[in-house]
Length: 138
Image 1 (cartoon, rainbow, N blue to C red):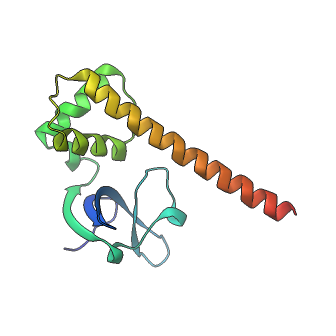
Image 2: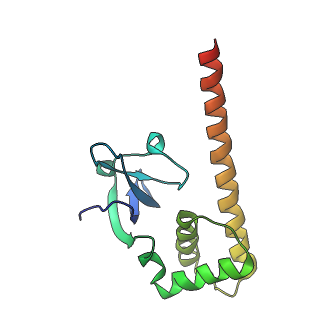
Image 3: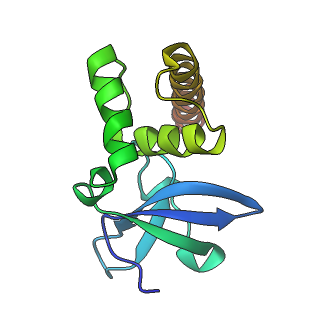
């Protein structure tokens, strides 16, 4: 399967399935995967190290799926904030857990987990950059 730039994929990496986004390095047009929309190339990894399970689609195609569109409407109607990649992860988790779309408390709980993961990643990045700044100041 040819990997396209700016598309979402379900992959298997290091024994677990995850949804990723493809990003071009902008120089040699090499494609890499990122796990978080706020990630840059420094946090990317090579698609050759993973197994692509399926192409989910680009930014418009991903919502063509009726189930995904219903989840998105729940997020919008309930005022729940997630980026596109997190929304797709939520759709995947709801499917895996066979959670009913009417179970708003369950969906809110999954959104809260995704928010917590985002906070942990942002804190880790912040600590890393502070460490770099401290070392360069020494």
